[in-house]
Image (cartoon, rainbow, N blue to C red; front, side):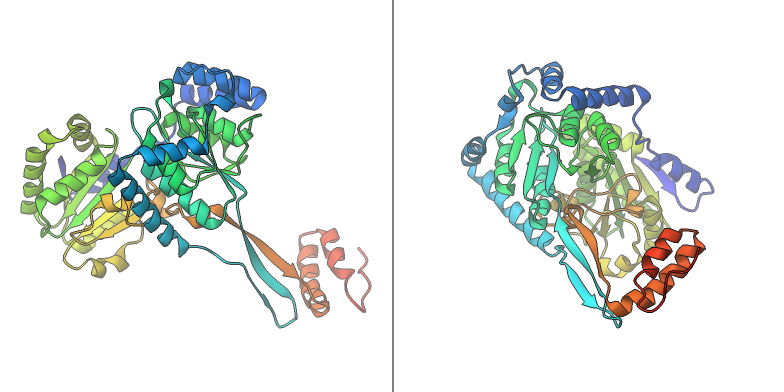
Length: 436
């Protein structure tokens, strides 16, 4: 891994170059996705069947044959290894328990004029969950994207997962059963996002689409945003570890590996004021890497987008971290709570030497769908909030119509919106509308 030093004059430029990532898709991909979306919107099931045959090598007579029944999900749940089932159920319980705390309630009050004011919180009606498929399986993504929606009270959740050649992982089906997915279609790619956004004869249109995917899925989500809501357009995985030099170097090396194994563009950074410790972690990396199943991917990730950064002290390390706004931040120090108030930007914060990022990925409870590419500066982890919407409540009293109406009239006329002003003035009890 490359070395950076905050005391060097070129540190700022080197850090900016290291952390820069292009999350936009190229024009060819954007054009291809736009054509797929337009085709699905125009021809519905017919186009969806054609793209499924083309991209997933699956030829079926109707989209209905691509839907997985609840009975099939239950069969999958009963067929998986007992340890895996128990792990899924344990994780689901913890995820549900955590997100229950996020549930927002409606509220209202009367002000001193007798006006009723408040907020009505309601769940979205239908949500689409996209789960990557094929060679990899992500049952954890099923839990993380579905359970908060269920806690929010979403009545119907429609899941899409590709099944190239008909191959579908039973763990994914089992997770869908546990999480409470209502309808499940084995469709993938941009065509799945388009079907969820526009609806077809068979696939119902949803109000919001959540879940990770490849560049085509991410581009499709970006393009259908506005017609439907989306959670976020995620970039490569990120981890930033701040260490005081007291954590076992093997632990830190493996924590770096845990994100680097996602893909070659994953970013793994270690910040520490102890240069000798950075050397020790590098030695652990060199020793442990050859034994990793995804060694080639990890090696490229660490070499191209990874770095060890020598800082003046731990406070400076947090300052640098805030500039980067990482997806995952590990504070692997003796007293992590002393540094927590200094953290301004991070998707999820893992505190203490015993808290590996992997706990958050699977079963700690908080959501693992997190902002990437510095978007933690302005966005948050997926949660119940993303599946509820708020409506304002205003019921004016007779007195409120006089006092608030007078203020509204002045402001409306200041904006030359006289119909607004007269609408308020007509409710005055003893004053005719002003002439315009």
